Length: 217
Ligand SMILES: CC(C)(COP(=O)(O)OP(=O)(O)OC[C@H]1O[C@@H](n2cnc3c(N)ncnc32)[C@H](O)[C@@H]1OP(=O)(O)O)[C@@H](O)C(=O)NCCC(=O)NCCS
Picture (cartoon, rainbow, N blue to C red):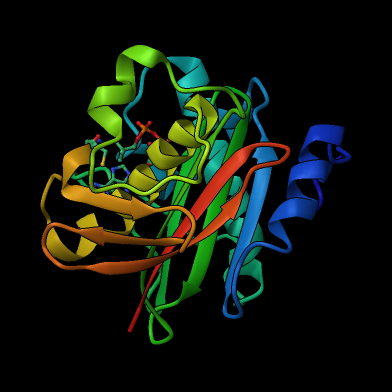
């Protein structure tokens, strides 16, 4: 996956893309883009009104994720298709497709699949760092299952999984879920929401934490 007009992939980008190429099940593609100052210049006019973040770094990240998504859309003959933001925050995909976007401090990720194959999907990316101990009681509950012995890095993975699940489920149910509304089973790579939605999890831990949550039709 190239890094953009006139640019080679950064080493971090190439390493993450290599991991992502092995992550997704058939029918779903994932791409990444290292955040670059000035990426907001790639915002399409049809997206500009919906991407209202004022902080330049946040706009760069939103556009980097969309840039990655457009690399995936090219496979469907839709390279320059716009991906505006709904008022809920969810991305709006071209007809027949579904996907998800995420960004952390250094990397943006996009996942895309056909809607007749996937009911919905969500993705999240996080640095491979332990969860802050302050957040542990908020994020991990008795309903979650972690590998034994466990640690705060596994807890960060649970956080990442719950964000991915939320992004997959919100467009269908329109409900704001809390961490306690999602039960994650890391060993079985499955998640269940309080409303009964069941999702499969596809997990990458190196070089960054990436979770793809997939709800099949
Ligand atoms: C969706 C949410 C979890 C994203 O978290 P974040 O750390 O801000 O940002 P991420 O980089 O992980 O993801 C951002 C992307 O999520 C997507 N997104 C935002 N709201 C969404 C929604 N309601 N449904 C699906 N996707 C959504 C957008 O594509 C967004 O990218 P953009 O801002 O460039 O358009 C957060 O914005 C949110 O709405 N939280 C409220 C509910 C919550 O936190 N519950 C606890 C976790 S289960």
